Image 1 (cartoon, rainbow, N blue to C red):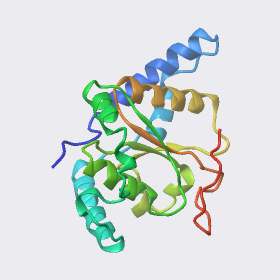
Image 2 (image 1 turned 135 degrees about the horizontal axis):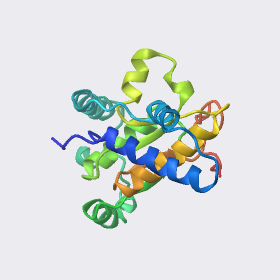
Image 3 (image 1 turned 180 degrees about the vertical axis):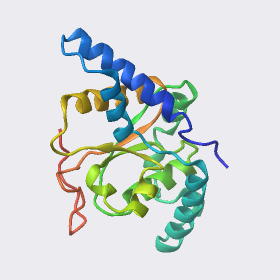
Image 4 (image 1 turned 120 degrees about the vertical axis):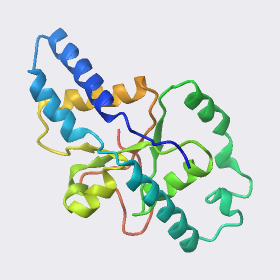
Length: 202
C-alpha cells in the first residue's frame, strides 16, 4: 500500500497563511491572521488516510468492472502507450520533491477516480483536486471529496479568501505536493451532457 497522501494538511495551511499574510502586508492591505486561518480551514483538504485506502480499493475494483482493459495493471493506456511518455519526468519531479500541476479534462462524473487510478497504477500518488464549493452540499459526498480536494468558492469570495487560496496552491507546490485542476471548470460544474471535451478556461 502507498504511504498516506496528505497527512500534513496543518503544515500546508500554516504555510499558506504565512505566505498570504506576508503578501497582503507587502501590498499595504493587511488582513488579520485569524481571518486568514478561517479561510485556510474552508479551503483545506480534510484528509483521512483510512478512508483514502478504502476508497482507493473501491475505485480500482469498480472501475475495473465498468471499463474493459487489455492490461488491468495499466488501465486507460492506449496500445501505443503514448500516455506514459512523460512518466519518467513526473517520477523524477516526485522524487525531487517538486510540485506538479495536472490540467485535466472533465467530461464525466468518473474523471477524478479514473485519473487517480491511472496515477496510482503508475506509482505517482493522488493529487489534491480543486473542487467547487457546490460539490460539498451533501455531507456524505463532502466526506469523500474532501479526502482529496481543496475547496474553490465560485462566487462572492472575499479578498482574504482569494489570497489564501492563491497561497494555498503555492504552498502545495513549495511542499512538493501534486494538484489537479479540471481546466474546463465552468461555473456550476464542468461536465457536459454529451461527454464532449470543451475549451479550457483561463
